[in-house]
Amino acid sequence: MPPTAQASGHSSTGPQSSTGADSLHVACPHCDTLNRVPPARLGGGKCGRCGKALFEGKPVALDARRFAAHAEKSDLPLLIDFWADWCGPCRMMAPVFTQAAAQLEPQVRLAKIDTEASPDLAGRFGIRSIPSLVLVRHGREIARTAGAMPLPALVAWVHQTLQTAG
Image (cartoon, rainbow, N blue to C red):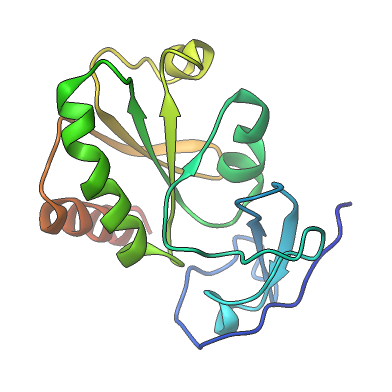
């Protein structure tokens, strides 16, 4: 089992662990190590392996190698932006997605997957148009939407979806 870290930082209400345990598993956005974080301390702390911050308020670039740690093993819901460099609406959506990360962390981790660099992941999720946003919890898709949207609509969609998904 990878090293774990006890997080320190500001108090925040976060997602409950699926196991009902006293801590959540949170993947480090830098080295992908799973860290145990008490729910009351979600939003702070450093990785037990690399020592970098567990939350920085910005999206994480994922590829097939890094995907499992963040989408399947972490207890945080993961909002994935499937995009490509040549896509105009994707370029419009990029700054909005970055702003959303600052607002949604630590309750949700945001990630970007380049469909050109990771066609296997795009295929796994049946991505037919971009940008496509897919919300995943423990490796299972719970919702998706396609197309660029303004920040308030994106944040509201994530909050509403998580509330109805339980």
